[in-house]
Length: 225
Image (cartoon, rainbow, N blue to C red; front, side):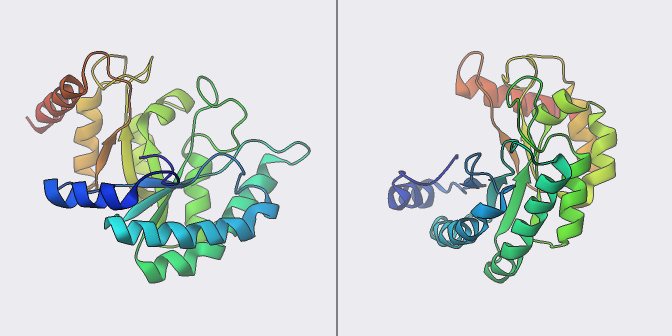
């Protein structure tokens, strides 16, 4: 789910335990204020510490963080370096806690104009420079498709930095199978690359949520044939 603040964490933990559900990830740090601004870094560290406690309560192994929107009079290179610096500050925290931070690049053509981090190339470079097994990428295939295409090729280039996969189709951010992305081929590539982590369905279903899940399972089944 998105930010944990304002949610009944105890109730979520209870329901998950009763129903055997695992919380795959939640958002620990959103768009504003951006971690691309060094003025936010002390707050960023404190929020990650708090979020680690929430993750432990939920038995959740991953937390999403977002780079932030463009800052006037600051170059993209400077903003990206600030993201690196912020991640290095919390690197010892998440490594000690055993909770993975997953940095999510967006797209700026359709949904997040003015965001400072989009596509895989810069995001992979950032994570490689931080160099931690507990700081990887929330690889959202919807965003990657809009930003750069070549989904399978980009996955091959950056698979060592993939910590989580999110899926949705384009246009509309509906469930896979409703748009132009041929997901069975992408799932096939993920399997060939040895990805065994979770795949999150972050979309607005065309019909019902159950039908969206069935469509997802169908695509995965075809990729296994």
